[in-house]
Amino acid sequence: MAVDLNQIRALTFDVGGTVFDWHHGIRDELARLASQRGVEVEAVRFANEWRREMFMQLGKVRSGELPWMNADELHRRALDVVAPNHAALGLSDGDKDELNTIWHRLDAWPDFPGVLPRLRTRYTTTVLTVLSFAIVVDSSKHNAISWDAITSCEFFDHYKPDAEAYLAGVRLLGVQPHEAIMVACHPGDLRAAAAAGLRTAFVPRPAESGDDATAAPFPAPAGDAEMAFDITAADFPDLATQLGV
Image 1: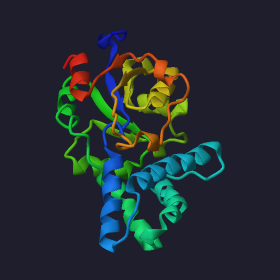
Image 2: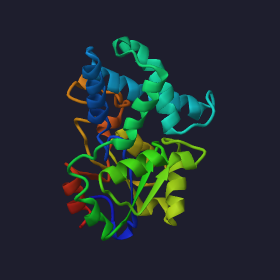
Image 3: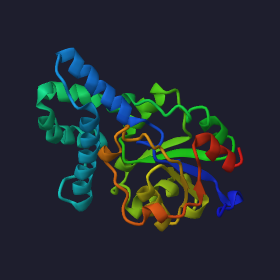
Image 4: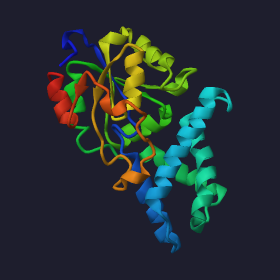
C-alpha cells in the first residue's frame, strides 16, 4: 500500500454510483411507471441516457454556457432532453417533476451501510459530490446512513472534476489534501482528485450502469484503466480492512 494511514485524517466519498445505486432505482421506477400506464419502455436505456445527459448539462455549467444550477435542476433539464426518446410513457411536465424526485430515494449498495460506522471510528467521513445537498441528505436518511459531514459542489463555484472542488472540500475539513482519501468507483474522479493532491481509493461498482455494459454512461477516458490508485479494494468491507478498521 502506497499510502501512510498515519497521515490520513479524512475520507471523502463520491456517492452517485459509488455509495448509492442510482441505476437500479431509476430503472425500476421507470419500469413501474410503464407498467402502470400499460406501455413498454427501455428502462435500462432511459436510466443511462438520463444520467449521461445530466453530466452533459453539468459540463455546460462548468464551461459557462449555462448558469449555475444544482443537480436537481440539471436532472430536470436533462429529463426534458431524453423523455422524447421514450415517448410511449407520455410524460407531462408534472410527471417529469414527480419522476425527478426519485433521485432523493436512492438505495445504497448493500455492502456500504454496515461499513461506514467502522470507518468513522478512525476517520472523519464526508461526502464530496456533484449531487445536490438535498439528494444526499434524503438518500442518506432513506438508508439510515449517518456521515460526519456532507458537502455538495453546489456549495462551491466549481463542480468536480475541477481541482477547486476537491480543494474546497478538504479545506472545509481543516485538513491538507494529502491527509484525505477520495473514495470513488469512477477512475476519472480519482484521477482529478489525485491531480489536486488527494490520495485515492478505488472501489469498483461493476453493476453501476446495469447489466448492459454497452449502455454505460461513463466510458473510461484513455489511460484510466492503467491508473494506479493508492488503494484498490474489492468492495467496501475490503476497503475498511485495508484502512485498518
